[in-house]
Image (cartoon, rainbow, N blue to C red):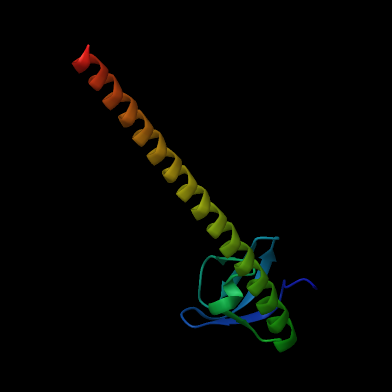
Length: 111
């Protein structure tokens, strides 16, 4: 994909602006009347917030945003599954500890 620097964009709240800088993860947009450029996550900002004047580039950015969203969703699902595994493991450990404690109490009560 070609550089987005100097491409014109529009935003529902901030109006029209121009991309003044980009990295692999962020873009800076200078909007009319704003003192400082606004920073947006790239390419996710093209899902809902930013619309490029160039429709071909807009479609490319939307495709990138869809791919990034899938990656983020997969990573979140993996993180949630990891947390669930940890919680289940801790629960099993607590149950095992409680069972051992109960067995010890029963042995001392008998002995």
